[in-house]
Image 1: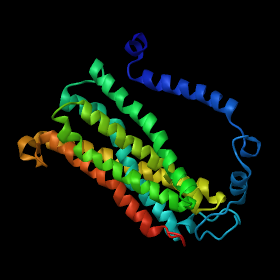
Image 2: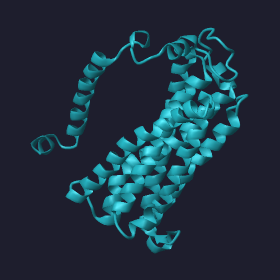
Image 3: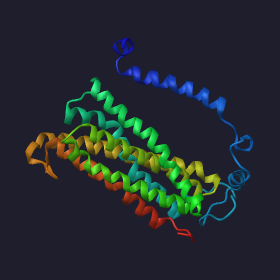
Length: 285
């Protein structure tokens, strides 16, 4: 395209930035305060206004807690460690999937097949993540679970789906379509997991602390993202240089490097769920 030829990769930031301003206008036009929205019922509005939570948060919202005092609570560390352990997986797939498709199958991002595979991944993420996010709500509505119980149960299911990443490399021996589908499902599971992680902050803390906790969690997620991508790049360089001397699960060289990272991403969510289950306590679960 002419814009890409003229400006190169920088054009992606210009286009995405412009779309962000367009989305901001769309948001300002459609957004309604909960108190004025027809989609929020009386019970939901009362819950939003109360600031009450289901765990030991001290009942009614009594003002914003101190920044350092938050770290004296186990729930804070649950949120921080969960984001630290799992955000890197999403960003690994986001950054490295085009390189993986090129390295393992020869489909560059500029090729028709490469673009089709990436579009397949994000189409699956878009559709499946929305469907999966409804799962925790169904648990609460149909099985009578509390918000926290329903969320933890749903997040366990979301933590199991990334185990499919273990099969990305083996099934890739047959067709590049299999890795694309599996990566799409894994990324959709992450989005459902991530959405519930954000909501978990509201379940565990008074509303005056939500912004602070979300910021702390975002920082932890950024550290996890940096660590995973930095380590992955170093591993791929090392494994490519070693060639057949670097082997893992039947793969050699850089293919083995990808297999290592896929396996780590696969189990990270169950590991994080275990941390959350151990640190988040409720009278009901």
